[in-house]
Length: 313
Length: 321
Image (cartoon, rainbow over all chains, first blue to last red):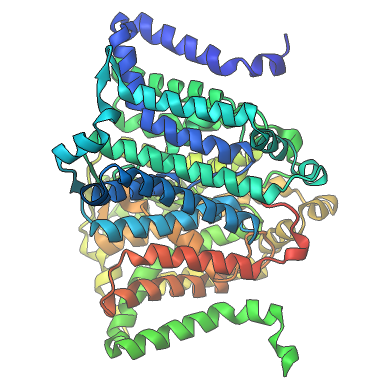
């Protein structure tokens, strides 16, 4: 059994091992109630990571996800009294538009995605600051419940966030495995020159991937603001690192082409378990960022496909 | 006359033209902008940013990128403040040793960045992004979230003592700009940065130890981040985890807007000076003419895209990830 063969199974093995370790340290962790709550808490992050998966799958990155989510918490809060449930549509369109802009700048203007998304993130950040008047805003509780109460309720002991995440992951799996767009994504991620040669409109596929990433980041922001019943231009800060970690730990390498949506689901659960394990092992929350940074480096070093990079810049 | 208006000439002089136009624009909008007092203000805000942007300039000339500056700056600032206070708390005592110590810390963090990038063969943007997160986390671990005040008058004279209307930190920054220029144009290391950025395979086949140049580049960048951290602490008198905040966006923006190409091999420290000034003039000008400060990030984002587009030689670029 060579390492290359085990590699594709590493993510779920890691997840099972982590759950077992934390479970042994404290059996309370394994209670269904606790596990379900943990999963519900991670859903906004998961949705963002889901979007990031598409950007990384084609060999790019989306550093604007956090700023887009920040902006949509503000949009959702501001638009709710005027448009009710229509606020969701505005959020989705805004995210889609900014993501498509990143994609356009990357593919048509030949700006590397980490710079184009950083720049578009700057635009989203300014928009969030402008719309919010640079302060935290709160949703009217009645209006929130009337329009978005379905997002955060509880049925059969299962929080609705999990259903929201479930629907999105099923849609993403369908898109990835059952549509020509999904196959095109795979082709672009596996090798861009070959994709160009076989007649795929690579630029369009990439723009759509970034647009999806922006849209899902916006949905993450929307859900987050409904959960917290408010919005602010900095409220989602701290999402970017765990979202990238979730994608990479799940086994979608930075070089793209393999892995995908289900991997990100496993990756996000690993992030969730690491987070709560820090509670159980009484590691200070301030060290979370350091731990995730190191986990990120380890995950990249293990998963990256070096045959794709002649020169590592 | 047409031949003067080539693409190359436009790309070369566009940053300077943009800077002049911006200064004129803000001066016309608000005469108070065009005063020595306000220029000193721009100088103060530019000084730490210039140090950090100079550091990352070397990396970008090599065709790599470093996104770790926020973490590195915070670690250096916090390490400096702890050492400074532990050793006496004033520059008149042995506490001055904290200054070189901060540079050593910066160099060490930079070297680790470089090792992660070169030895683990991880693309630099991701290696440095991750290391930046680790750095910020480490600074948080050291401080536990507290702010450390550095109130020594002698150290704060960086800001408080003025010479010809400009505080000392501006002259310190200019001194390091000259050092960076010297490294870039008068040392083998500087030449090697351009060799690696101009074409890595060529540099490699002509016998250059590319990985060693990389490591030295990241170490050097770390030292410049440390200087930036010292100036940042000197400016506000506080070292904390947030000392490094926002430097990533600002410094990358500055370097790119100044005309240093992301592909490597083109540009240099003078471009970075112009870029830093553009960013800080926009920043300051918006406040002076009464526009809200938050528009800045959006405007800078658009400027960056324009700058990269202008500096890209489309014929030589095949794939953009």
